[in-house]
Image (cartoon, rainbow over all chains, first blue to last red; front, side):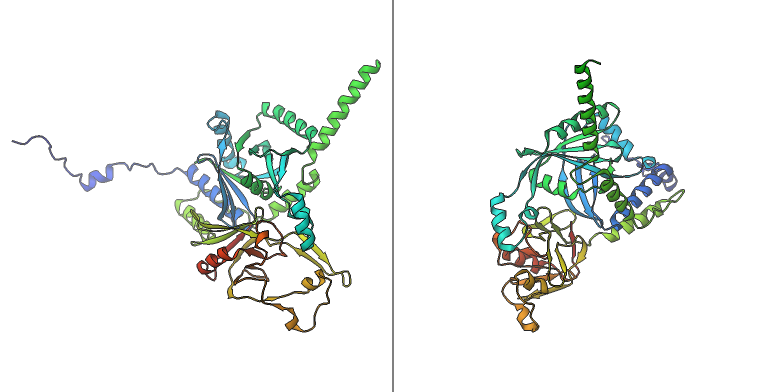
Length: 213
Length: 218
């Protein structure tokens, strides 16, 4: 007597052809999107200038040069799962709006000097180098403003000196108003040394691509 | 008009005007400066993206291959001039990180001839072109001018065996990754353009890299 376990017959070749594959074939729209995105990155890689990739899904910010990863940072984004950020991601990875955004401006709100000026003046005197050239600032808070009004704000746990109270107040107020009209604003915490690298590397004109999948 | 009202309106207009000026000015210059930087960044894209009406999976494979060709095959060096760190890594892992010193950004002008030098580490993509053991420094003219000394006519007087450490890695145009007698200054941008590394890190790096290893400097 057989105790269950009837063998399932193997499918014939004809039947195999009829079984749909588990992954649907990409449609033309997806192929076009992927093609344009690859070429957008190819352009940036061939420019031999640094560019950024903001990966909203993996919450990663990557700096690349010539196609190679040269720096990356895992982001802690406030309100990361909000609808605003999801909509923003869709908008920025839409081929009609272009895949590349550029840094239009950067604002330093507060920072602390990395090396005491007294040490740098001794070193500078001995080596005949201007001490201000050797100084690096550890940012407490800075912003990168991209075209189309997208703002990324970075905050570290450094206790720095305010650059300009009046300017900071004006920026905060004007940006709050612009957010009411749809500008997207991502706030993220970052370690001081990473903040220093990103702040210094992100010159006006630096290109950024946003990846959402 | 009431004086108080007039002063309030005047103050408000002044605040708006100052704010408008500030919004045009960033840490790095005026709106005009930024527009120039943006235009220059756009010009750096050397070719327009190809536009295929209906790209196929094969076209995508081609584009992926083209992008893949630009990437390093395996290991590469990254020099971060912003925080003076040198990293030896692959795409997915960091093999080691060392403190280095990169260019100070200083300038030197020879008052006698008007010649100028800018002491920056070049940015971009390079390759290791040579590996040298016990390198000697052949001092260029600026090294004498900086010290207020006469530039020697005899080439032998330019040679210094003591300042470049145990190894040097040539990445082109007269720039090297080499050792230093100033290890206490590692982490600060003090060099004339070359990249200085501590002796232990240099020893590790020299043994690992090969001719052709890519070097990315940003």
